[in-house]
Length: 204
Image (cartoon, rainbow, N blue to C red; front, side):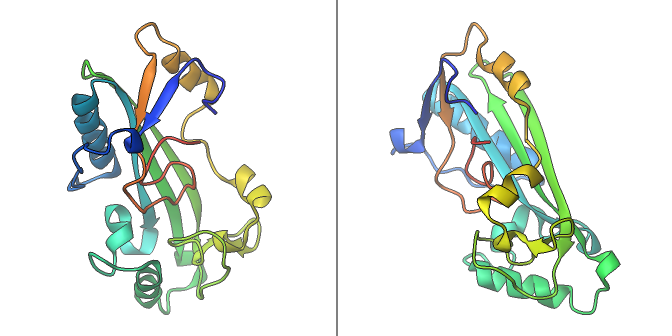
């Protein structure tokens, strides 16, 4: 989405000595804001960062900000999925609502920032299905398509995913007079449920 804008977009690979950011916030916004603020202070540039995860209605929003470590600090995707399946055992279909959620923050060196949110509603399946994707994709069922995200082709997936921010809105922000280089906080986090913004950063 940003490829044809007059921007020089960098990533964390351009800053190998950048400090790691511990995600200890109590919300997706808090974590995204902490990452963006920390990297903006370090680089002196405008930073794009996000946080994301899976929220399950029956579990009061869990795993939420703990999505990547739901079954433990070093849990694998399979372990997280197995724990979620166990938590949802016996729950009827009409109570298995869930959503992949993402919050994106554009943070400027002067301390001002913009925030954007995206939600992809669906349901938690009763079995693991599909081999595409990662994370909770094999369990996240899209009723309109009758498939889990891990069963969707890229062509099927694209129209289903809500944009975290619209192109016109981003273009207006990104072509402002004080914005010429953006540092994208990417490459250090696993969560990516919205497949383009998650746990890493700024691609739509």
